[in-house]
Image (cartoon, rainbow, N blue to C red; front, side):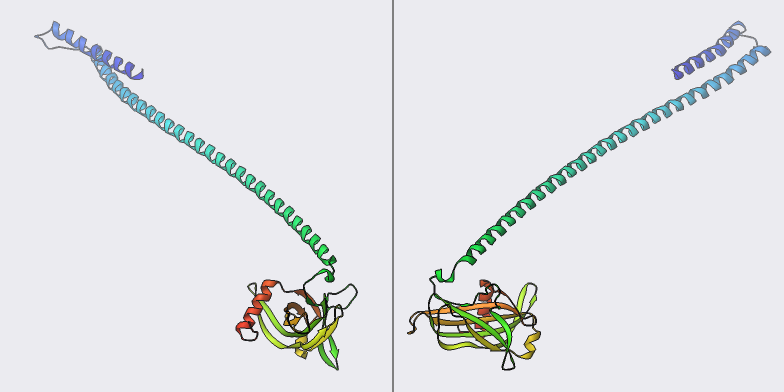
Length: 297
């Protein structure tokens, strides 16, 4: 609109100058044209106005370009803000999704842990029940011939303990025969010191000998105590294993021969008998002793 008015004003000014000049030239074609002071002033004013109109026209063009530029900047800023808003929404959605997944994972983990705890408690109660039942089983009810490290009864001395015999340190070991008298008993012991490295037991044999060597018999349910001489320096050892291996028969003629294999953790420093070795650890020690040529296969 501003541009249109500027052009219209410009045309009006051009014609306001040209028409009087043409008119004066028409009337005095063969004479010099003379202009009055008013006409000259009008012509000068018209020329100045013409220049001013051109300036206004150019300024109007620049103003239009500036408006277009500002409109383009505005559109670009609007598009940028919309893009940032969409990106922010996506980030918020991602954060909400991650939070939901974390809560879901946490709930799942808690559920699994609760299930594992319940299962562990059940297994513990089951094992405890089995142990109570097993402890109530009388040795006499087992048919397999056995020689055992005598089970400790409540209020009685441990079946394996340190004592003195003729002013000599000794390890007393109580054994018992179950389900009948046993014959031709031969049992060898090995004392091993050990240390644990990376969940692996590293051990050395520090003493060996016999607790029974070709003993004729052990009467059923009668506890027999044998003694092993113990060196003074052994009394400072906390981590040791007493390893037994031998044989016996169920008859005097040695027709049916059975193996005797047991091993226990023992603390000489505290004079304390610990739990027996499990089958896999016993087999591992036995295998290594056989490889050293100490035991026969």
